[in-house]
Length: 112
Image (tube, rainbow, N blue to C red; front, side):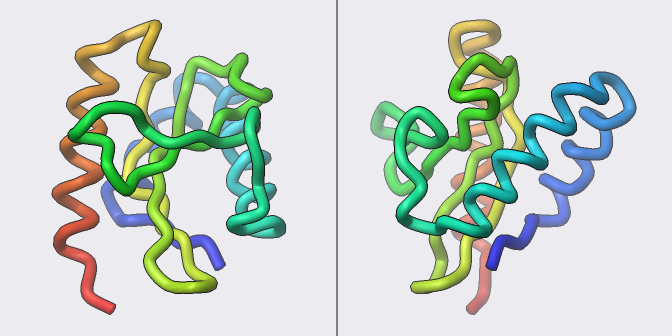
């Protein structure tokens, strides 16, 4: 099961309104996560690098050729939560890092 943090839903809505093809690519990547779960492999997902990214993973729509990265975490054996929608780090490193920090804060507030 894949669920969205409410703030990530808002970020996804902004993406839908501004870049429809990227929105579709993100939904396709989320669908792959929904179907494959932890078996989803690179290049479709990878770990978020750096100390601040610990425990987070990023979906890589279009096998990494997308400008957007849904940041997620596995919260139970069968549940993943999309915590933020971030620009790809090489395109906008500051915004990516802000999204990582936001995702970590959102993750820390999840009650199971």
